[in-house]
Image (cartoon, rainbow, N blue to C red; front, top):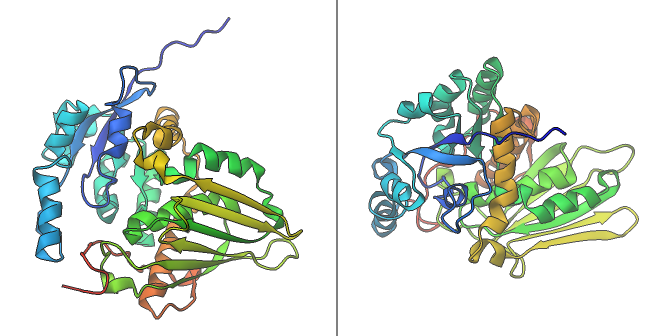
Length: 354
């Protein structure tokens, strides 16, 4: 009888605690501040975060609230380390490279810079969505990973919730005619991905046209709360059928955090709802567990469940929608994205630029 030996605990470096970092929610589950038994075989052992007050713009009251959170509150590297029992707080992210087995890169606006030393060391990395400010930077990062044999895993936890994974097994992708989906949205770069990531796996790849309606893009800023908006997606034709078309609503539908409905050519439909209370409630492990298991698997095996083409296409879609918003809400072809950049600064009100 072949009984597996216990796996070693993977030492993970957490790189970035800024406005795009998902704060410390993942760390709390990985290092298990909720109960005695920890089912995961990875731990955050090192943490680094920048001084974000030096490059954060917006109204004085909002900037003060956020910088207080980073510098003195629960989001500063020292405070997170104390709360989650992280033994090493680094002054420079390069310090941890020789002492970890993998890294979680959480500031997408500096993703290549932050991931580079780990990839050159041959370490697998996770990149919080979106993965980079533009496609060329993402391509550089993926090329470096390929050169050094490193797994790159990306995305939002929403794509790996158990309900979505179950829904994935039930969807007949060849017979999809249209879809409607919805996700909550506070910041574009953080929350649009929460809806788009599951769609990539539910509907499949092949998006060719994108348009965003309801928001003007705020001309380079990522505001604190954008108005209710929607992203229209059109896919390449499958077989002899018309192109799949659908809409992702940004701002919530009813009271659910995530809501998806897929319509088939035979006029039947599949519907999926994810209740926000699972995420916002007292047991965040229920929301993040399956996703973090995927992250752990990628780190242990140094293989990713997604291809580099998956990663590039997902980034192109979120950039194309943002480009559409900034250019009069016009239809943008995925081939037009080029080196267009995502916004990297959050401000308090969507229609007021400092």
